[in-house]
Amino acid sequence: MAATTFPYLTTLVLVPALGAGIVALIPRKAVAAWFHEAIGVAVTVLTLVVAVAVLITFKSGVGGFQMVSSHSWATGLGIHWSLGIDGISLFLVMLTAVLFPLTMMGARVRRDPKSFIAWVLLLEAACMGSFVSLDLILFFLFFELTLVPSYFIIGGWGYAKRGYAAIKFFIYTFAGSAFLLVGIVSIAFIHQSQTGVLTFELPALMHTHLSGTQGVLLFIAFTAAFAVKAPLFPFHTWSPDAYAEAPTAGTILLVAVMAKLGTYGIVRFDLNLFPQASRTLAPILLTLAVIGIVYGALVACAQRDLKRLLAYSSLAQIGFIALGTFALNSQGLSGSVLQMVNHGLVIATLFILVGWIYERRQTWQIGSLKGLQSPAPVLAGVFTLAMLASIGVPGLNGFVGEFLILVGTFVAHRWWAVAACAGVVVAAVYLLWGYQQVFHGEPTEADTSTRDLSRNERLIVAPLIILIVLLGIFPKPVLDRITPSVNQLVVHVDQVTNTPIPAELRRSPLLATRPLGTSAASAPTKGGSK
Image (cartoon, rainbow, N blue to C red; front, side, top):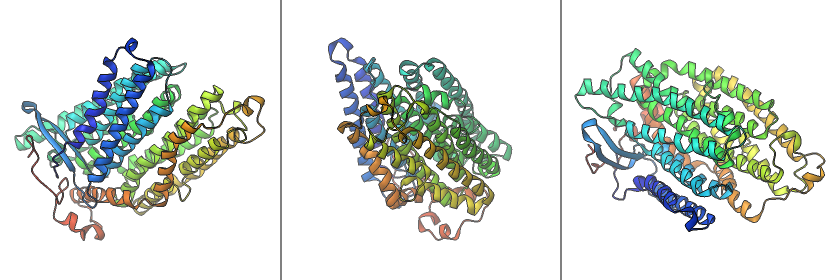
């Protein structure tokens, strides 16, 4: 693992955490309401600057973890402050860093902004920590910490059924996380019984020898938490209520960032720790992914609420990510990691636009919205572009990820890929229908008074549109950084499961001589690392 002198990753976690503390400590009466918002935006922008520095420092073509920071924390318990980043987590960190400031500026709240900003910053710190943690206990703490601010954001600033939605979200995700904790402790003790060393660090636990039954049971324990968080069918039932009742900012962060903690967890931990169980149970997960794709698309067709339509659309997209993940080959996994980023950008754009529509019309009911294209052509144009990206039109980012996923799945599991294609067709139906109902037709008097996007709103959504187009036209720089880490993971799974390694990976000098988790720039890590 490659170490670095400046603690970039620790800074990524601490900046929003300290920002949350500062906002919480400033008395409401001491400053104007906008001052808390200004601090919040400044902190998220500073976090984005650090994330950009990480992106610039990150070495392309290296498959192992980089910028590692490892320090003994609870030595007797084997817990370390162990952080690292690779091509799989790099762009999820960037996605988080980009979306938090845009969400804070584009989805402001009028009631108690101080508390809202503090919770959002704490959520950003927890998400960042989850994406870069290499110690399983540390990951669990960050993973669980995301529940607290999310619960208060939904329950404190949501809509009519916010209390019900917040409790349902918390119970589902907390119950899933209980299985995760049991799984983490179990694999650590199994590793200790084999080596005499108690540790929760991922690179060490990857070499734990598990029986077939142990691997399957631990895989199920881990996946229970990740499937709820993502959410994957049939663990998704909390998500339509939470997405619909959360405030716009909460919805964006839940679906665009927090949902990726689930899919990321499957890639990072399930495939690394339980490769044999992942391959054994892959047909079941592929089947659930396809059902989620088709079910999400069909239920979206029946929605008359724009927010719920997008919620079920997101369920279908998460199904695509799971499909590529359990193809267990380079194309499918690269497509899944890329699609996590693509989906985050597209769904964030759509939900922020829906939030602005609600501010203008005070409704999400599709039947009460029509003809908005005439008074708000820019709003209609931006919505159209994001909608086409979600459908997977070539030239936009959604196409690249879906194409890689379908190619990878077709190579390994042909009929699952064929079945998933039905979801692509149905997605075009419900998204185009929703667009026509909202933006086409003869506007009523209320519709004609709907204002178009303001200059500030256009500036907020512009970075998202630029990234959607740029990743659709030129995804190579992103894939160049994702693919080496994915290839290492694929080789690891194939070696453990005695599956023939593809010829192109066998010839790779990067993978031929180094175990997973190391890189060409390997160096001893400071603060108690091995």
